[in-house]
Length: 111
Image 1: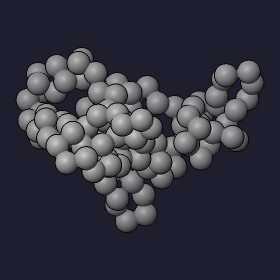
Image 2: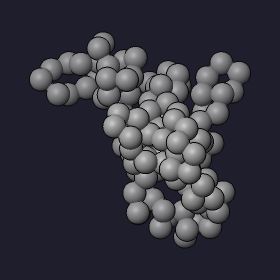
Image 3: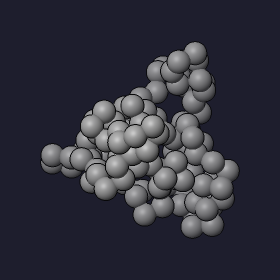
């Protein structure tokens, strides 16, 4: 499937509501350690999520985990509070490339 990669992100936050923090790689963590981003590493250390069937839950108290903890609402859109050093999964994301993105249906251009 190809997608129209010229779409500008609407900054609706939907992609980050999928809790992409679950897809942080070891390379992401190594980078944050090198950048001395203790703020990010502390969140990851305390996040402690695990997959429970089709959702993420906290290993410590069982509550369902929603969305990226680095997503912030600003006036009329969402913003990433760690955008300059966001994880690889976020850097590689193209608007419309996932079924959760509002552009998904309108962004499909071929199989």
